[in-house]
Structures are given as structure tokens and as C-alpha cells.
Length: 77
Image (cartoon, rainbow, N blue to C red):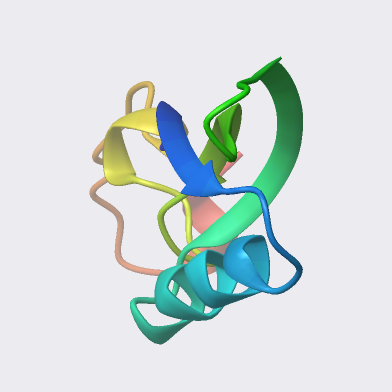
């Protein structure tokens, strides 16, 4: 599942890297970063799209299923 997160960070080298490391600790991946605003107070506001883990959610994959009762694989089809 993907999430859009708006963050305000100090506009200094390494601050986005620290955030990326924190996301990585919980198996989340950053898909994109867009700069929304650079403020005069020394902060930057970013929109970050994050995916929560390297797996697909069940509801994203499972659209439906069939139960097939048979005695052998040869009967399927």
C-alpha cells in the first residue's frame, strides 16, 4: 500500500537521509520525494510517497478465486 506523507525537515544535509533510514527500519520504501516549499526559517516541506514493505497486500492481489474439487490434476481443465 502506498501513502503520501507531508513532512517538514531542517534544510540541512542528511535530514532526509535520517528519515529514509527510519522508514527502512520498518521495511518501508520511499518511492518519490517532491519539494513543496523551502521556508526562510531553515526548513523544507516535502511530499513523500512511501510503500509499506516489499509485499503486496492481500486485497491488492486477490480479486476472486474458484474452489475446484477433483480427485486428480488431470480432471482440471
